[in-house]
Length: 455
Ligand SMILES: NC(=O)c1ccc[n+]([C@@H]2O[C@H](COP(=O)([O-])OP(=O)(O)OC[C@H]3O[C@@H](n4cnc5c(N)ncnc54)[C@H](O)[C@@H]3O)[C@@H](O)[C@H]2O)c1
Image (tube, rainbow, N blue to C red; front, side):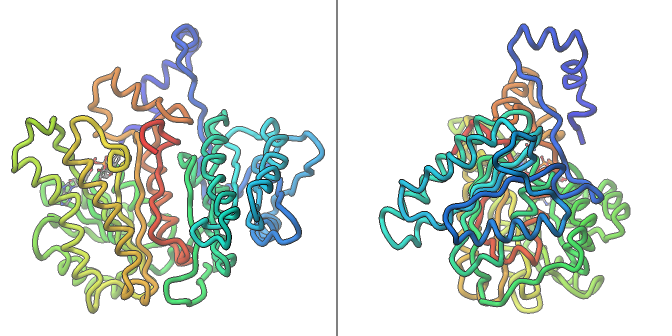
């Protein structure tokens, strides 16, 4: 697995000679992003918290969370550095209230430290009571994405839309966005709602082990992003069942053994793989709580040159197999109530990509599947969440084989001006997999450093 640390290009960039070359070419120097460590604080500096009016339910919860974690709450009137600014605009009634966003965020931007965080909070505009209210809350999307594009030095901005009466469900999302877990997530809109079946959330005893006692299946786990997902879910307390094709058996066994989990050799396109996964989990581990549909392939070619077999293989591995496996996984004796399904899409499924019609179709289909399944009444009644992660340019063997110039463009065309690491995708998957996150379902979060490609 390649990383920026052992990437010769990144090493060249940080050498004095490289720096001169880069400056003369006008290529920006990527900032080393703050990433999660078990013993690191949620935030490595003070936080500013602002809001509109007296009723600021999320600001109040953010303040309580940060105080529990020993994070200092900064003074809005001084000029000392701050690691985060959180602005709660849930009370906005119309566009005039947007001034509060400017008033809180504008003066704090100059104070924001490297890998700082801007978190804007509003309400889902679809459930607004008036047209004015809908306009104001929808305006936060464009505002937050623009702020994210103005930030420098690895800082990110994201928007959280919290439904009424779901205010108590926001903690896991705030923790994720404040911490280094969201290093490569920027310009995203995340909706937090009620739990599907009205049950209240289960908060973990220990936030460093939010998946303790859970059994998680990861497909395509032998290498790349899948191996990183398995590693992060295990770090967060889950027992791992690593699934991959027999040809990857040795690497698969290596991942499973390292993480003290088990390996299951299976092709996701085989008719009985769903049942085999369910049987394996119950026989070997007594339960199944989390399934990450990560296995995926590309067979890139212009559509004019794509034959039926090439088209079918991509659609079968990336999309149809998920539908087939879900029949067993969501069937009787499959995944537990309050379980979590996480699907791996791609920004190619959002923006499309030349030469990737089959891949774009499959990954866009994954988004449709995610959104529809999350709204399925039986799935909701069981409190099961279904979410998708859409990676942008991630440093893996797959992207490592792209020709140098194309790779450089792909790697740098985003607000953080660098490629992401497999662990960045894995952190988002792990957050989706938390019981404390049961209010987040049907969401598609891009892990792309706010890629300029697509939305
Ligand atoms: N690398 C990126 O930049 C990027 C960007 C967007 C999305 N993605 C998606 O992330 C996921 C992982 O990508 P990666 O870069 O780690 O790819 P990868 O090729 O390094 O790993 C994919 C793994 O899936 C396994 N796999 C393939 N077909 C399978 C099948 N039929 N049954 C079981 N396992 C199978 C492979 O053996 C491999 O271990 C894929 O769904 C990919 O489309 C990757």
